[in-house]
Length: 411
Image 1: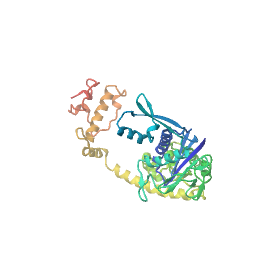
Image 2: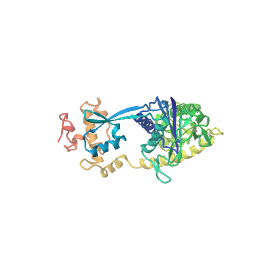
Image 3: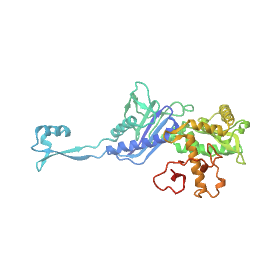
Image 4: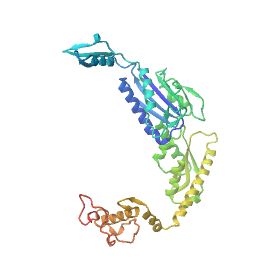
């Protein structure tokens, strides 16, 4: 038995696709080897922006020999039926066995070498991989999420020979795009992760997430701040970097006159930055970005560049916020009357009104909350009591479980 390593090297894969890609790679490999009858052990999958990798433990040397019995036509069947059965099985008439007037073909299939099975599996995985979006390049015969550059396929220390669209499998990959752009020769599954680590690539996404989580917290603490926890941002940054280095930066405190939610959303969505809070729990004029390189100057130039980009983003956010608050909420709500929610249910404004009436009724009946006077509703007409509308058809009546007197039971 030997371990099998497969690495598919490409241009950068979007971070949002990597988790599903790992699951799909594991699933397709298991399906291919299972259908072929090749026994395998545990399967581990990894991803970085530039590579999708799989390590399968304890691959059997070959599939087991099999004996298959295929039932054929009756011995006195027409010649056409017999000829078709012989073509299907690849046997001659004298190689068939006759039992109670019925012919049987006994097929003895020898075991296939593991390398042959794995070569077929690689071809099928690349051809059938279910990327949400994919590209064609070259002559257009191959599809992948981004142009595919290399295939590492090693069973033990031996290369599994396979060629796909001119890409020949081997034992050579590349390290970090900037720290080690040259080629690396991999000895097998056993030294794959360590050789990449020596070339500034951490192939295990879980380890990169841990480094970002801990490093971002330490960077914030070094500036007397606390990190605003965001696990989704940890995962996304791990999918954007191969050698993550969290760095603390600061922005102009004047931007803090913009609501906290606007600033945090701008940093998170547009720049993938972590927000920071001060000792009082208030938003601080600081951020933590995750670099993909270990800069010689400690990252000061990287932080400055990110600060400038963030300043432009926050300036845009402040502009749109200031424009929005110039229009009263009541005026903004009127625009909902021009948006169709459903052909038979009216506009979005109608929907808001129905939800407001239902919410008020739930509070007044004691189904939700205990103080009807404390209910705060968002409505196109918040001063109007739902029972003063004169509209009996508040909501379409459901077929069952409508409580008498409720808005759901009217009309």
